[in-house]
Image 1 (cartoon, rainbow, N blue to C red):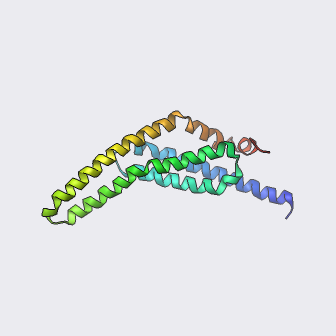
Image 2 (cartoon, rainbow, N blue to C red):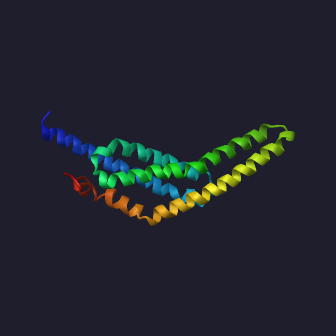
Image 3 (cartoon, helix red, strand yellow):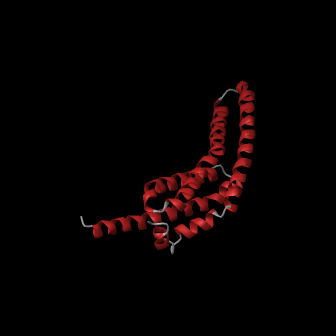
Length: 164
């Protein structure tokens, strides 16, 4: 295969990955308000799913973009998944214990209720940490950087910047 044809395939792949990563970041940002509101546990779950999909795309595309700016965005995507994990884990536990309580005989309820109360306190503390993390992330200019690197007009500059 000629170098020109190989470069064309590489450029096409880079464009596709750029567009996919842009959509994946948009999905993360779109899901954040529900996670922040905290009304529905699915809000945190949706952010984590979106961030895992983003990370997978970013893992595949790591060689397409300059590491000097790509690596910090990739780390941010990983951090989002990780930081929301403590809240999500408690949400899953609370759901499981609620189902367990519904199926348990009444004499087991007090013990299950104590566990639920403890997990709710842990979840509340984890939410405080999550909200602080998300506020710090927002203040860091992450959205602006993502828009600059993965916005519709960014592809040409993103692949050329810091190139050898």
